[in-house]
Amino acid sequence: MQIMPPSLSEDTTKKSNGNNRSTWPDFMPNKLAPGQSEEFRLMGTYSSGHASVLYRLAQEKETADGQLKFSGYGYFNEFPTPAENSAAREVDWANPARPKIDGSFVKPKRAMVWIAWSAERQRPELLIVEQSSISSQLVEIMKDEDFSFSDDLIANFTLKITRKGSGLETSYSMLPKLSDAPADVTAAFEEIKTTSGVAVLTEGKHPLIQKTEFKPATGEDF
Image (cartoon, rainbow, N blue to C red; front, side, top):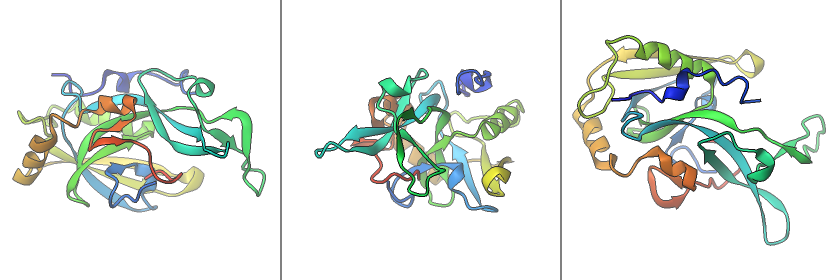
């Protein structure tokens, strides 16, 4: 059984040059406030289709009046060429008006995506991790044979993700804690196991929202 996405341990430094969180089932560590922590339990593995490493790209589309507007995020198996995949334009942060720069596009970000149980919201969520420091910590955690997955494909440990500092001083830590999955967590994963494969992200769908394209309502990440 392959638990970890193989590409998590690869060196990719050469490659990587709107919905409210209470309703949209996603979590990104950068939305934590400084000093804040949240706890998750991984559900499923790479082999079962519930974990992967993809490229995540902010995208724009043309509206009826001919304007380019943020339209959500596209996910790709391979590094996508921004200009050829409707990438959102970069913002001129030096200008107080924050204008978009025509012909200059945001770069795709490599993201670990994993179905996980949120202890805070008591539900399965899509854990989206773009910070290599967090992914590296998970790789190290999984080298310890004490941390494993049950026959139900649920982690026998929880992960406490903490953010410290802000701006250029931001850092993240991931602390594991051994504990068997409660019955309600096992039951929740059993209910979604066959429908929550993360591969659907590359088709513009969401693994936890059936028959719905993965397009947030606003330009904010949640």
